[in-house]
Length: 148
Image (tube, rainbow, N blue to C red; front, side, top):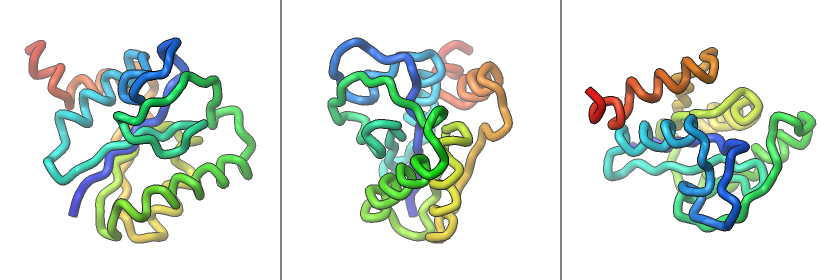
């Protein structure tokens, strides 16, 4: 069994096409990426949940965009989640753990679908504000270990 980490995209992006892991430049995203890289075992994987590109491999080069699920209507978010699920299912197995570092709009339909497919879904920062999320990520990542 492996763990799959899903990190939501963010509004702050570089101004040119880059590997997805470098395109998103917000402090929150950088902390989430650091947390994931610190937690991962060799068999684990991580992906970015992109409002435009759906499920994105970290090294996949993508262009900047200005889309978010936060302003999409619920039927559009459901379609987005269905597309992400169709990308994710061939790369995973029932019983794998999915850790979601994403807000409710990115999680709602996707989390329900993943649970229906018998994945263990964890949302470690559910209910935390952005500042609390940054502190949590820092407390649970390599960057905290380096600063101590």
